[in-house]
Length: 226
Ligand SMILES: *[C@@H]1O[C@H](CO)[C@@H](O)[C@H](O)[C@H]1NC(C)=O
Ligand SMILES: [Cu+2]
Image (cartoon, rainbow, N blue to C red; front, top):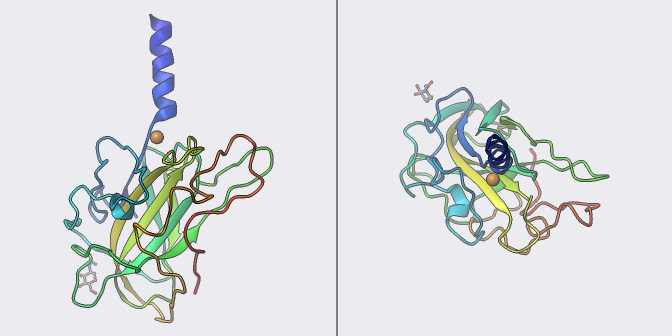
């Protein structure tokens, strides 16, 4: 009996999912829109679903706050409990259109640019920088125009991604207000969610264990810099 309890605890620890509920030192869901998985921690698996954008519990109902950040500042985007699956981490940003608010804007359309993308270490298996992390640092580009943005965090769990629909997307969107930017940012690749990804993208449908990949191409556009 004791033995089987120990086994089931071990299995649940290995399978544990996660959420991204906060940014900086703020409270959960203060600046990050509450996600549909706020209790289950479960992932989005359909890249064509509207959930692939911000995974909101109530679409169109944002968080109460908008976090003031300075362009060029690095902020921790926090995971709970920790990023326990292997896979890539990315951040995208979208400027809130004039006349709209970060608290309610949907983020629809070709408005998202990628500002961060990590890569695995290769050789004898894939090792991911975010593996086991409780937060990932994101630098708000110095060259942004001042104003409100949605900042989208995305981690893709690739442990069972060998067939279509097997990749697990852990997503949330933070509401931020940027000041101190130089204003020269002009992203070349704006994408929409859904739309940016397809289930068969080589960075989404991939067996990361066998045969051991010798390269990795993340889904979506390249990360843009100032
Ligand atoms: C955020 O910035 C706005 C505009 O500059 C300011 O009115 C507000 O007080 C700031 N909020 C905080 C919490 O510092
Ligand atoms: Cu999981």
